[in-house]
Length: 481
Ligand code: FCB
Image (cartoon, rainbow, N blue to C red; front, side, top):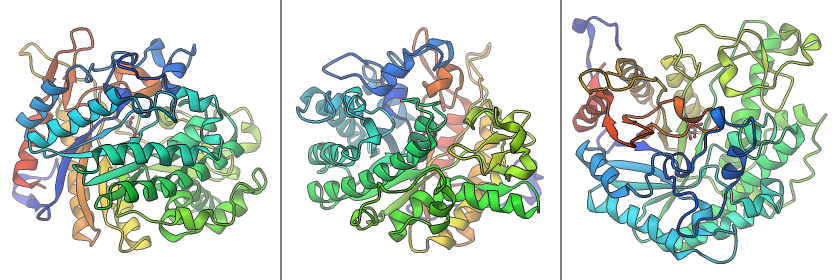
């Protein structure tokens, strides 16, 4: 780890066949929001709703990746990045969400996948990274049970078009964010604030994973199926039993509410019991858990930062009725914040160091998370499908981007993944978020996660120092710990 004297540092070799890559998502990088038949998504609408996105920014242009895809893939190849996780924009493929297929949308992703393969880069597409067609939102969006079938029909189209050349499809990215940040705290599209609705959306997303997995397997029988969960590492803030119970509760709502139905075929009893005061779970129909419990071939794990929580008593929740609902940017704030979708657990401020997101940097919690998953869900291989950090470094006088804080973050987090593997966790790959600086949702363009800097006026790309550092790690399949 950084800070360790060189003499005490050892070589951390990753397993043979470990997959290295970078990740992006369609709305965050593509731009071309109104071109070649793409329909509007909930993010186009959300960005135009006053007060929802910093400085009123939108993904209309973003990194203009849609028009610069060949040059971006050349850059990726020149950096020696072996795999690329991207997402398919549902509204490019099905502008109305269901029904007529937009062939120009399919053609774009076919060109992208073929372009990757020509350069020896393995494609890893995610079908849903938050850009629901607006036409489907107008039919109720994820709150409508039919959404699971809409998603499966869309999955059939994409797997049919790309299944001959794609080895693994990911169904959903971070359904927790979709359900709770999109429907309970409202900081992501579509921006609702209804705790009961968020639970109904959780269930429909789980159903979408189940029906979507079956659709992928039918259309592309040799493909593997995965999904990416932002599994939260939640610690109690103290030894107080109330805080321990809050951590159990938050872990249930954040993690086990997805992991258990998908990997074990049942919702956790404690989550159902805890939430019964505001949700009757009548949306779960008799055969649903059999549909959902199809598992995954490999579990995608997105990790950035841990949380620490207290129970309502320590939070003084009785006097905090006006407290802000939890949102991801407020973790560094001064007062307890309600965990999204509940008032039974409260996140408390943590000490730094922080990234530009205000997210505490704590690599050991990444090791804890991966070892916990491997203990609680044995036999499920994992891939890190996102990890990275926002730091605002830009080109200096020498024209280069000296993002040493990113290198330090990556160094320590890769060492943490290595430690989990050494402890027996079956982790098969690592995708760094992100290839390019991009549109960071409600926070707009000033949170820079890229290995490659993007100048949003000229759209010029400048690989940061971390890009050559990461190339070296990838080439060596290891790093100095
Ligand atoms: C994740 C999202 C990704 C990006 C990173 C920083 O929650 O999946 O799109 O915004 O956070």
